Every structure is written in C-alpha cells, then in structure tokens.
Length: 380
Image (tube, rainbow, N blue to C red; front, side, top):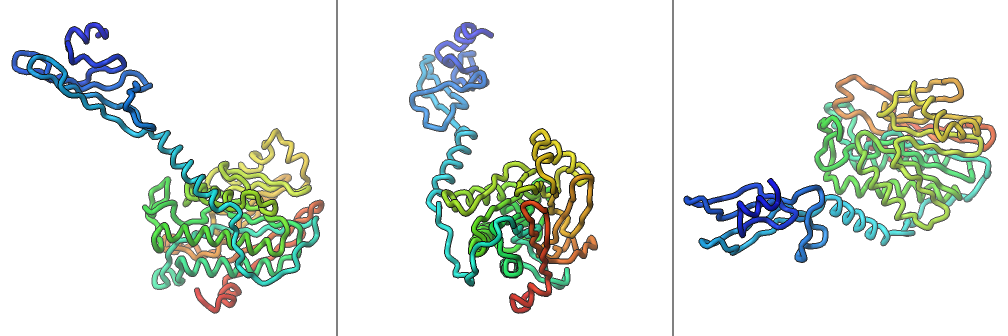
C-alpha cells in the first residue's frame, strides 16, 4: 500500500514518513484507536529528541474517541556498532593512563647488552593460565598460583642460561589463557573447561605475568619484541591482552609489541624468517606453502633460514619440509582431566632459541618440569 493509501486508512493515526504500520487496533465500529509502527528501510528516521547512540525501532500512537492523537511512544535502542565503538574508545582512554608504566620489579642485575648479531627467542608454549588440575584425578595439581610460579621460574632459568644478545623475542604461541571468558567454555566447540578462580582474577594475574616477563627480559636484552598469538581457547581475551601491552609500552623504544590481529605472524631477523601460528587453523603440511606465498614470496626469497613455530598440541615435534622447518613447543602446564583421560602424557617445559643474524639458529636451551620445581621449592 502506498503512503497516501495508509494515511486514508489510518487517518490522524497514520505514521510519519519513514514508518510503516505493523499493528492496528480498532474499536467495535471499526475506527482506528491505536497504531504501532516500525521504521522502513535500513536507515532509521531521526527525531530531535533522539539520544546520541540511539536509533528509533518503533512508534506507538494512541487516539481518543474523536480520533485525535493523545499520546505517542517512541521506542529506541542503542546502536550496537556505536556501543562497540564507545567501549573501544573507553578502553583506549583507560589504557592511555598506563602508557609507559612498565614496573621495576627489582630482578637480579645483568650485564645488559651483547652481540648485536644474536637474538634469543623465549618460547611460551600454551601456558593455559587459569586451568585447574587436581592430582587425585590427573596425578598433578595445577592452578592459577602454580601457573604463575612455574612460568616465572621457567623464564628466569632460560634468561639466565641464554647468551647475552642484542635482541630478545618473547613468543606467546597461543592459549595463554585457558578460558576466553567467564563462561569457562571453548569459544567454538562450547566444551566445558576446568578453570580456577574468577575470570577477572585470572586476567589480572595473566596480564601481570606477561608484563613481568617483558621487564625481566629487558634487564638483559636492549631490544625486546613481543609476539602474542591468538589461541583457540582465548581468541578474544588475547586481543585485549595485546591492546593492554600496546598501551603499556607505547612510546618505549626498547620494547616492540607486534600486532596480533592476524593468526599468521611473520617476523624477520637478518637472514632468518619465522612464521608463528597457533596451530588450530591450517594443518602443518599447508603452512610451508602459506609461508612461501606471503607478500608474493619476497620474504621467503630474501631469507635463507626459515622456520615455522606453533603450539596447540602441547608436545615437541619437528619436521623438515623443502626450505623450511616446522616445530611445536611443550607447555609448562600439565594436562587437565580431559587430556589425562584421553591418555596424553607429553613432557612439560620451556625452551629458548638462539639465532645468528647471518647463520640461522645456532643454539637451543631447555628447562624441564623437575628443574622448574626445584627452582620454586618443589611446588607442583
């Protein structure tokens, strides 16, 4: 029906331009007593009384016995895109308060600096901060406090035994957090997770841990770069962690926070090219081709030494493809009940990789669960 036709039918209750009637109420004689309308088209109409960030989703008109409009209700709703942008703006403003606020944690002093041709990479394999494991079920206890102690001790040991170098790269291989939010479920499969403590507490401890690792590394290495992958357990909270780190170290020339919006992150160091991917996307056999095609193959052709580093599987594996080596790393976390039930029994630990600018990888250092437990006094 045309707009003119609607006005003839509804009389004084006809909705204004831009609205279409969706419900009409009449009395016993067939006279229209009220009309409910909704906006036509994709773009909602604008009213002078409209609040910022709101759009009109409906209009109700009430008539008296003579057909005069006695009242109207304009129903509004917050625009979702606008609300999201407001939240992001608020988060950005909040994070600006922390710019340059990296804390001095009074770590043991090191002789800072080293060979500019060397880079040490600290590989954080699937930390799963916030996971809960009970030794009665799984043979090993694990919770938020133990995760903090384990990771900190492992980082300390690796930094102590790795050589002095001009550069350090901290690589979070994904699943830094065991859960993505307070629901305690995997985002895609909605599988229930064994979690410890409140989610807000887990994030607070996790953020502080990574900040502490960076501050620990920069005492020994003049230049620190941070790569933090999205995992299948924490795809959203990992983005928030990234934003927090960017704000924390904004303007700090000694610390580089690498953007992590892409699940495939490429980094170069001299003649070394690394691809970092959590492992929940493309299969290992497809990764060499993905790496070779990156940026029209220019980095692949420019760099003689190539490797792909992943996590996800919680155990060590290494396979050489034509032109590139694929590897995964262990985790410091034990298995939760599901992994224990399935029979997974991978070793626990962490490693650092040492690369020479021209000669590729020249060393690797590892720490295992037993050594980590001795460092923290036997807590497990």
